Image 1 (cartoon, rainbow, N blue to C red):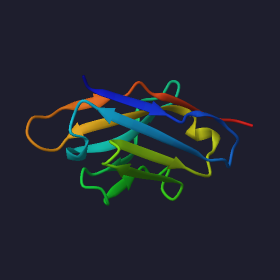
Image 2: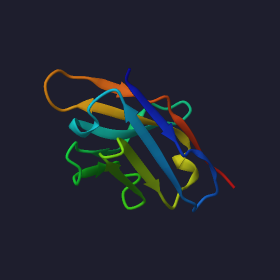
Image 3: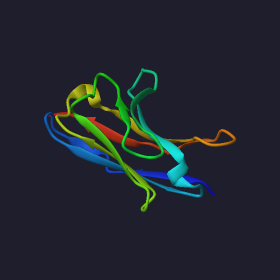
Image 4: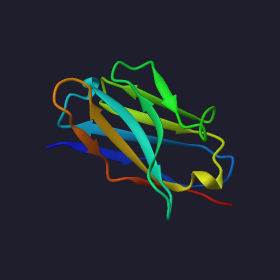
Amino acid sequence: QVQLVESGGGLVRPGGSLRLSCTASGFTFSTYTMSWYRQAPGKERELVAVMRYAGGSANYADSVKGRFTISRDNAKNTVYLQMDSLNPDDTAVYYCNARSVFGRLFVYWGQGTQVTVSS
């Protein structure tokens, strides 16, 4: 059974930091590109950060460049999103996404974790 379980969300003041985690099971984590998306109320889901299956190479939405860092630990089947200098525009539900790289396409989503930035 495939599972993506996010954790680490919560309420934080502007300028603060949070670290999201997403732990995967049920598939070969190291062969999947891992991403973080977010969806704010009344807005479409948007890509925040993506890291290739082999690690190292990452891309970010312009709105989070220099503030967010995606990383992965293939030994722990976990992808992280370090979020610094948070501002109210970062308030959203954050979702973990896994996308297969080899062979047949599989795409999996986590259940989401709420991040609220407010004073």
